[in-house]
Image (cartoon, rainbow, N blue to C red; front, top):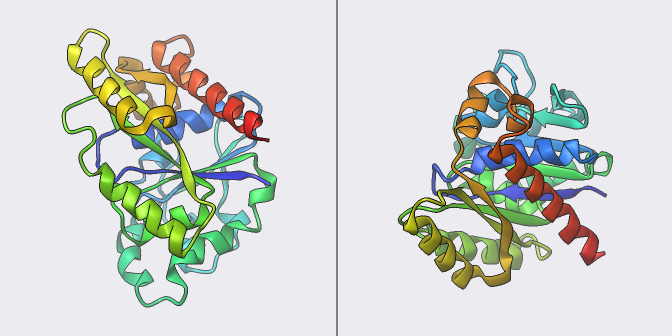
Length: 257
């Protein structure tokens, strides 16, 4: 049965979508059957994998609120082994629509049951908030992966995220745990990055991945070409970092079995 991981941080600009897209691509490149679910109304994971947000295309909105067959919302990507359930602009109003829906917090968990056995990993790119879409993702997931940028205020708001994870675990999803914390936008030339990394490791301990994602121009450029970085520039430092992160994630999972 596939493992479902929510990539979440309610703070914007931390490398959440970059991590969701590139970790998914690297898991697929490592031979893992991978599905990326874009649950962010901005749809950056969708465009980052080269998909157009076109009218009539079934999306994560239809998966949650239109009763669509999950299989019909899944689209291929340019990478073998990687598929995506794209976002759509309709997701922007989904938070309001979900308020009146019965069992609104568990909708995503219910609809993913029929497809999770077909994948080794399902990654969910959550919106930068702790609303009902993110609650659905946390309720459906086995774990949550938290990207944190190596900049000022890196830990700001994280107590709220960890509190939300605890509440979801207590009330909706007892198996949910922190998969790990990923340090992103690391600049080895600055003392600040080293200080933030030290602070995050002190706060989260062994939950912090050894792999650190550097600041890298190629990582920033790749989305504008609709490609994960390992297709855009396989040899750049960003590609190597996300390959290492995928290996570390797979190794951690194998050691737990």
